[in-house]
Amino acid sequence: MLTYAEALEKVLSTVRQLPAEDVALEDLCDRFLSAPVQAAFDLPRFDNSAVDGFGVLLSDVSAATESSAAHLVLIDTIHAGESGSVPVLARGQTVKILTGAPVPPSVEAVIMREFCDEENGAVSVKTQATASENIRRKGDEVKQGQEVLPAGVQVTPPVVGLIASFGHERFSVTKQPRVAVVVTGDELVKPGDSLKDGQIFESNSFALAAAVKAMGLPRCMTIHALDSREATTSAFQQAIEQADVIISAGGVSVGEHDYVKVALEEDLKAQTVFWRIAIKPGKPVYFGFIDQQIDGEARPQRKLIFGLPGNPVSALVTFNLFVKPALRKMQGAAEPAKMPWAGVLESDLKKKPGRMDFVRGILGCSPAGALSVSPTRGQDSHMLSGLAKANCLIQFPADSERIAKGQCIQLELLDWRS
Ligand code: AMP
Ligand code: MG
Image (cartoon, rainbow, N blue to C red):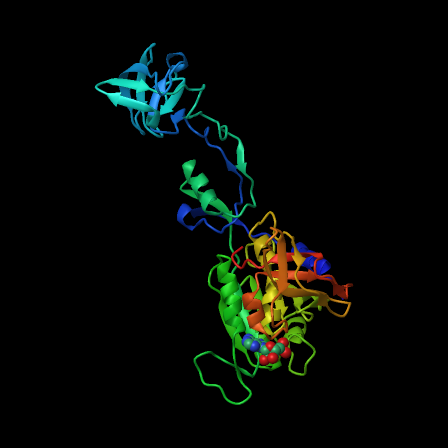
C-alpha cells in the first residue's frame, strides 16, 4: 500500500494548473497570483513625512533641548496630497508638514509636533534631530521594477492592499476549479427530513461543501447517489460534466454495496492513480482522473476524482490530506501542501504498526512556552466531535507503535481557511 507521502506526491504530479484570469481587487482575496507583483514605481513614490511635524535643518536644532528651545520662523505648511510650490528652507526657518505630505529636498528631518510649540508664525523646537528622521524616503521599501511578490502566492488582505497601492484595478490570478460532491448511501436522509429506523442524517456533503467554501472556492454542487452501480455511475457522470474536481464520500471500500470504484473504472473509464493508502483514518481513498477532449482546445481537460471514505472524520481528514493540496495546486499555489509543525506530546500514544495515524489533536502553548499537543477525546473515524474540537492532525508514523508523553512529534495544522 502507498505511504502518505507517496500518495500525496502522486496527487500533486497528476494535478494540472488552471489558466489565468484577471480579477477585480474586490474579489482577489484567497486567490493565487499567476504573475509576480512588480513595482510599477518606487514605494514610497516620493519623500514624505511619517508624522505631523516641522521640517528643519539639522544645524538649526543641534543644541535644542526642553529648556533651551531653538526658535524658528514658520514659512509654509504642506498638507498630504499637495503638489504646489516647494518651499526651500534657509537657516532659522521651518515648514509645517503633515503626515503623508511631500517633504521638500531642503528639509533634513521632520520633528514631531509633540516636541514643538507653534505661536504666531514662530516655532520653538525642544529637541535635536538626526538626518532623515521621520522622513519616508522614495524607494525605501521597493524600487521600480523590483519583484515584490512571486507568482503562486495566495492573496491575503495585505497583498490586496499592495496590488492596489501600485494602481492596479485588476490582477492576474489562476482560475478556480469547480467542485462537485457526490455522497453515496441508502441510509442517508437530508437534514430536515424525518428519519426511519436504521437511517442517519447525511452530513458529508455539507461538511465537504463547507470545507471547499472555506478555501474561498465557489459553491459546489452536491449529488446523492443510492447504493446501486447505475445510480453511482449516473451521479459521477453528472458531476464530471459540471465540475473539474469530483469529491465523493462513501461506497469506496470493499463492501457489497461499494460501487464507486467499479463505476469509475469500468463504466466511466477513469484512470486510477491509486486506491488505498497506509493511513488511518482513510485507508480506502481512491484517486483517479478522466481526460476529456473539448472541441477547439489543444489539451484535454483533466477531471480529478477523489473517492473519500464515508465515515465523516475519514472524509474530512482525507480532504485535508489530499484534496486540499490538489485544489491549491490547480490554482497555482507555490506551496500546495501544508508545512509541518511540531509539538511536545502531552500524553502517550499507542497503535499497531503499519499505517500512519492522523491523530486529532489540540495544539497549544505549555506554561513553559513550548508548543504542546494533546489528542482529543473521540478518535474513532465516525466521531466528528473529536475532529470538531481539534486544531491539528498529529502524524503518528506508520512504523511506530508507541510514542511517549514528552516526545516532540510532527503535526499538520487544521486550518480550514487556507
Ligand atoms: P461507507 O464508506 O459508505 O461504507 O460508509 C462508512 C460509514 O460512514 C457508514 O457508517 C455510513 O453510514 C457513514 N456515511 C457514509 N456517507 C455518509 C454521509 N454522507 N453522511 C454521514 N455519514 C455517512
Ligand atoms: Mg455506504
